Length: 441
View 1 (spheres, one colour):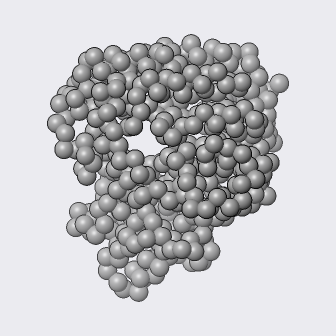
View 2 (cartoon, helix red, strand yellow):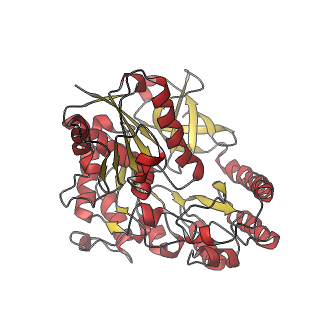
View 3 (cartoon, rainbow, N blue to C red):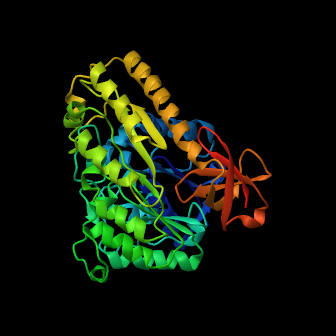
C-alpha cells in the first residue's frame, strides 16, 4: 500500500479539494499519512492568491528534493498548477505530475501514469460530469466541522485577483446535491457546516428544483433556508461578495437560529476611487448601507472583512477614507494585506506606485485603527453567554478546550476532553486580542 502525504496551502476551497482527493485516494487503496518522510507520494495543493503562498511550493519541493535519499513521487495540484501547468516541470526540478483545479477527481489516474513510467504527467482538463463532491468522514479536517462547496470559480474579475483565471467561471452546484451532502454530514456527526465558494451569494444554479418550497429574494437566500431545514445545528457561509449581498440574507439569518450570526464581507478599500480601480462593483456608501442593515439585525451579527492597503494609485487621502470606513463599520476582525502584484491580473499592468515602505506604514496604521475598534467591539461579549462547539484540546494548555462560537469567535475554556464534539454554553470572562476566554455555564 503506497502512502500519500498531502499538504494544503490557501483557502477553504483548497482544504475542501484536499479532503475529496484524500477520500478518492483512500478508496483506491492508498494510505493517507501525516508524516512526510514516510510517504511514497507527496501531493502539494497550492495557492496563488498571495505571493508568499506561491513561494511555499518552491520551498517545499526543494526541501523534499534535498532531504530524501529516495525521492518520493511529487505531485502539484491547485491554483499554481492550473496557472503554470507544464511550465512547472521546467521551473522546479523534482515534480512528477501536475493536476489543475478542475481535474482533482483524476489525481489517482495521474499517480498511476507516473508508476507506469510516464514522465511529466499533466492534467489541466475540465471537471468530469459525474464528479463526486462527497467527503469520507475519516478524511475531513475535523469530525465536527465540514466544508460544503456550493459554487466554484468567479465571474467578478476584480483587477487584483487571480481567482477567475485559476478557478474558472462560476459554476453553482444543484441545491439537491448540497442538501444531500449536508444531510449525510449530519448523519456522520458533523455539528457545523460551512457553505463555501469564492462568492457564495453569487449562487445561481442552472435549475432551482427543490428550492421552490422555500421563499427568498435570491437563489442563495432560498438555499440558506433549504439547508437550515435539514436541522443541522450550525450553518456558516463564506465568502460573500458585497454587490450580491441582498438584505434577504439577513432576513434568513433572523428566521433560522441555526444560520449563524457571522458575516464575512470583504470591503477591500474605503475609497470609491480605489474601489473603481479594483473593479469591485460597489461604492463605500452602498457598502455602509449593507453594514447598517446587518447592525439593525435582531441578532448580534459579527462582521469580518478583508482590506488591501497600497493598491496602485492609492493616495494618502484614499487611505484616510479606508481608516474612516474601518471606524464606521466596527469590524470584529479584519484581515489586512499589503498589495502585491500577481502576474496575469489587470492590476499587474498598473504602476505599483506605492512604495513598500509606505505599504508597511499604512498596514501598521490601519492595523492600529482596527485593533482599537475591535477591542471596543469585543467588550460586548464580557460576561455574556455564547454557544461554543468544542473542537479540540487547546494547543496552549492541556487543561483548556478550544472551539468557535456561532459568531465565529475563537473561544478557550477550561473543561474535560469528553466535551469535545459537543455544543457548550460558555460565559466569557476575559477578552483577548484574537480570542475569548470563559468558563462553562
